[in-house]
Image 1: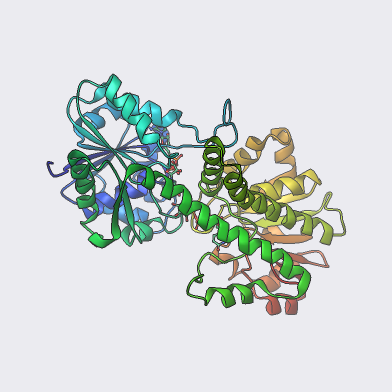
Image 2: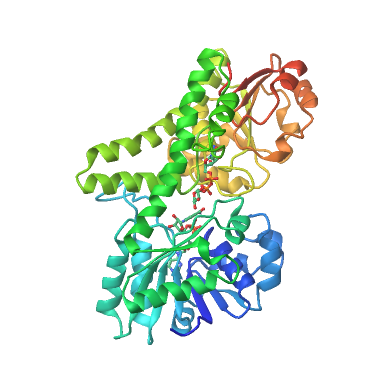
Length: 465
Ligand code: NAD
Ligand code: UDX
């Protein structure tokens, strides 16, 4: 197999953008072209002002500044990039289906199929096609079928190389990946393709962290990794509810169990519930696959992780309403945060959306402040839910640019994203601004209980009585 010198990535999103930027940065001898059909997104990736990149990730703009225009390119010329590359990554979105069979659970593979058909149409020489998107087990088979039957007689090797980066730490995760997983056929050409991709990563990662498996294990491992991670969050969140009833403290429990080396300390932070584009989508997909293979017990087991997460979001909104004397109608409530976690501008499946929606159902008057999420995104998230008409969303919710000013005459503040800057705010001043009694609901366990109560707040922290 020839050494890889040209890579194309289809899909310039939260995965394609950072992943390819790091590959280009670490492999100056490889030309990397990231293509997308979304012209506005590509224009943003090519923007002069690096603060206007389409996604916010710590460390990303520095890498783009070094590599863009040298061996890293963003383009809408999809066909040309496919034709020139020896290796093509498919990194397009695979959302939960919103129609037809499997609606609400199965992954929608129409974008992936379109990519496969496009590659088949354009390719004039042998290619390695890499599934970077998260896909249901055995998708590679479908891709291979399309490529083999509609192609121009060229050979395609299909690899699965799922991405494990987490948003907000994407660059760190890519530079110091715990592992890279490469699934492919065990035929001589399959092995050669796996080795070719492995060599790309070996430019900056130790070889022993690059795992090779068969395609199906690789595809399924990705769903299982996300299911296990989300299960930890749902497990600790379920116990946070019990703590609130029993005077036990969830932080002390996380610490106590996390010291057991078999359990480990990570991913045990109780919260308003997990969000993000992956956990819910991938578990629903796992549930769907298990059910379609006639394994209802397996499906029900994993579905419970989602049900517990829905419960946690609802529970937080209900706690706010109950504590505010069972009515929030017309009351000004400030939400600190909208992103699904800190250090990202991504709001997909953010718990904030559902908490806001529940409070707006009770006619609360919301003010939202998030350091990275623009106003249009917040309204788009609410409009997408379709709970009420768009004008009503705008009547009930406004977006603030000054987080302290926003608290004037507010009844309550709720912390729903764990942005570091919230910790440093002048909470005494916020207290002065607010109506009394002043309530703070800390859905991220970000603030110090004693300090907040000493200031005079009625302070509620998830997982503490
Ligand atoms: P995204 O929506 O941010 O980006 C996908 C991009 O693909 C979009 O810009 C879209 O315009 C483009 N696209 C769709 N169809 C196309 C086509 N036919 N040709 C060219 N471009 C096309 O999605 P994302 O968050 O980057 O996720 C991509 C995949 O990676 C998903 O399968 C997801 O599950 C997986 N993943 C995501 C994360 C994450 O943190 N976001 C982590 C690991 C894996
Ligand atoms: C996740 C996986 O971590 C990553 O490996 C995969 O590639 C994509 O999906 P991401 O969704 O970007 O990454 O962020 P992650 O850090 O996993 O957080 C997901 C959600 O869980 C966030 O809403 C976060 O706030 C929440 N969470 C996480 C908790 O509530 N408590 C925790 O202890 C950890």
